[in-house]
Image (tube, rainbow, N blue to C red; front, side):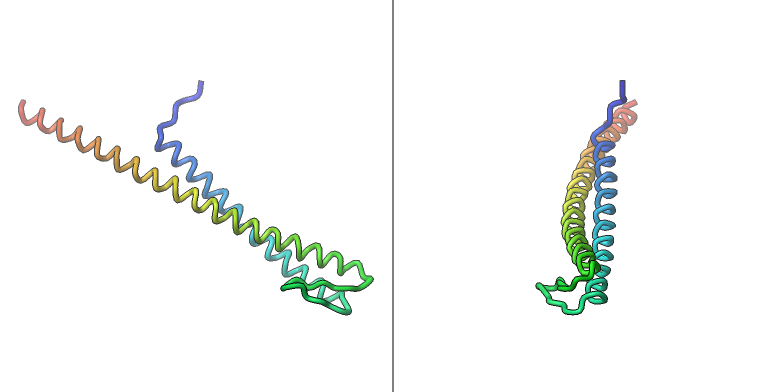
Length: 126
């Protein structure tokens, strides 16, 4: 059988896991930004005529590089949006775990202080 974890150990594990997930989400954002910039540069380099839809260049040309540039741009934009959203989500989750860990530490410190006071009273009476 596995050993039982205390609530503090569980919260520490979950906070570490959330920190790892947050880092992975921000790396996803960075990879998305690299793909996004690469897609824009590819489209601008290959396309003869470039139309802009919001901030995404759409090149109308017979060159296969235009389709590649559009695919890179859209996948980069998707990775950036989902990476940022996941990073914020995991950051908030880690904040909750850390808050609960601080409150459990405060409760345990209060219990420990009461035990020390009782022990001092017992030793003082002896």
